[in-house]
Length: 144
Image 1 (cartoon, one colour):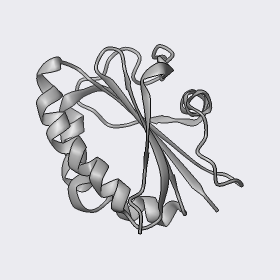
Image 2 (image 1 turned 90 degrees about the vertical axis):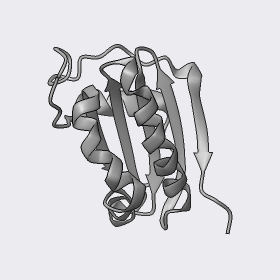
Image 3 (image 1 turned 180 degrees about the vertical axis):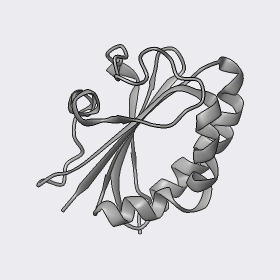
């Protein structure tokens, strides 16, 4: 059954942007080549907020990606970089990437905040602003 993963990260300062991108670009490349990756979209929102929306063959595929390579190296750094970070996952019947509107709805209704060192007042209850969806960009797995 297809598995959806949505992440939302807000950097607490522009000073973390270079380090964030230094780790985000290799993680993006790793996802595109990961076994079981089907489809994805990236959203650069306002106030240094970044979302990922990915579709996987199953939870095991996503977890294998998450706990290996460049992504595994980047994950511990988020606790210091971010003042908001959250994640939501779900299984779905169809193999189409959900809309960003659905991703936002699920994040608010079913998401959970990640452990970070300097949380904003909105972090714990996921009361962040509605994302601006016009800047979302698709990314797909590498052919073959």
